[in-house]
Image (tube, rainbow, N blue to C red):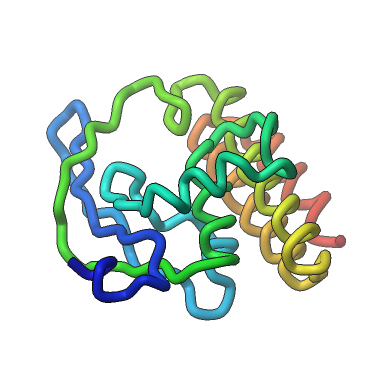
Length: 173
């Protein structure tokens, strides 16, 4: 396997096919952004990952991360691994992921969706401040991405006043 031949690699992931309840499908999973890494966005479908056991144990034992409760529990793990090890992408679809109406990352409740996106931003901010020296360019990139996602969310939910309020508040930062 790739990981046996490359001991510096701690995580391997692939593409997955999402299947919505109406039968529509899409492909998720792509190479990590070469400039911003996983901070740009989480491109790793959890169900496709293969991680070395010793790396999981090392992550679990990391005092600085123990006890933190984030909405996307896998994302901080990927960010932590990316700081210490190689992550490898295999460009193949290896699994199917059912997209449910209600889950941690998908919801019909706008408040849950907004809270999830703000939680992802909290994860990104934590890693930028603690592993990237508080790089202002990265913090701005993460905040702009969060605002863009929230703007789109408000529009989809018909909350135009909130969308344009968010836009106006953040355009002048």
